[in-house]
Image (tube, rainbow, N blue to C red; front, side):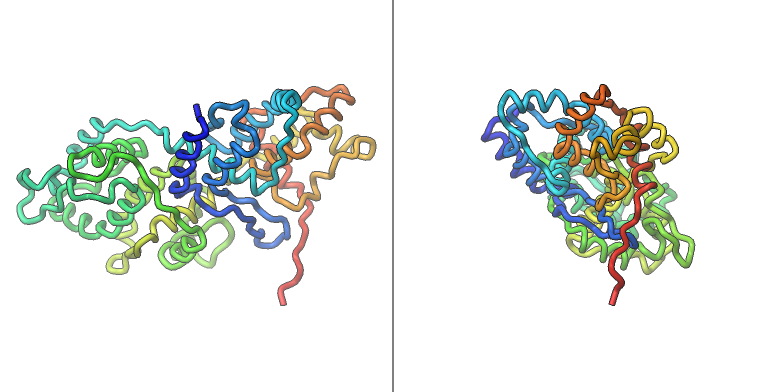
Length: 395
């Protein structure tokens, strides 16, 4: 439940959320002139949730584990929403950028409510051999003579998982060498493990506040970090002169902490490949890098265009947008100026949904309902048949 004061406080909190504190903007596609809308600002999304009167009907914002599920839920809910708006004589209009901000806000809530078990984190701290070098406080005897690291009570950075991850990344070569010399394997974590471990570390007496904070990252600076530190081995789609790991084809983490986990688990392979050239990150580089990775992957959902063609037909989209387009006046979906994504689909239903609903009623067609997979496949189909608008030649 949100009241006015609670919403303001929550807005201030989400401003610090890294993954969604990206300025909303449109990136041009590599070749076509169609633009791709990327995630926006959670802080602005929280404000829009109030300013656009969403809060009048929704005590809390909707949550969904994936962007396509959220887009499908918003689409399926639309007729009920329009009836409620009509009763209140309100009609919020949202463009793609504002929708990107709202999506960012909706997804930020899932990060804040992710459960964590500090007691399990304490057990992991022992099981993963972290306690061999790090004691909870300075008064506890260290276990590996001469190699004790700073006690947890001095780890002021654990309240921000990204600052903590940055320091641990830079510390990785030393940890890698120390573990190897003692015959210990590099500890691997799941996202749940990392959430529990961080909850334990934050709760240790003398450490920072148990509240999680996130410092904003800049995806453009993150792109520079990626190109200088990661691009020799990794890419995001496309063809490269040498074999690289295509991150666009790998599942993206569901939570911000998942990026922290992936970076930690990846450190040994990076160390083996890079050796003395292991990249050391500067202050803020980790936050910026994750912002870039997040922006690249947030709406990448590999739908099936062939299945999407079936969805386009079975949900009667084909009737108004293709078979009877001259009679209905429905737009040609193949000539859009924006590439389709969960954001653009949600923006379209907010802008044009009521008129679309009336037209479908006149045609005797029911309002279509979508599952997350159907929405993903439909988006893949729409993008597959998009007539590419070529940009002007570069001078």
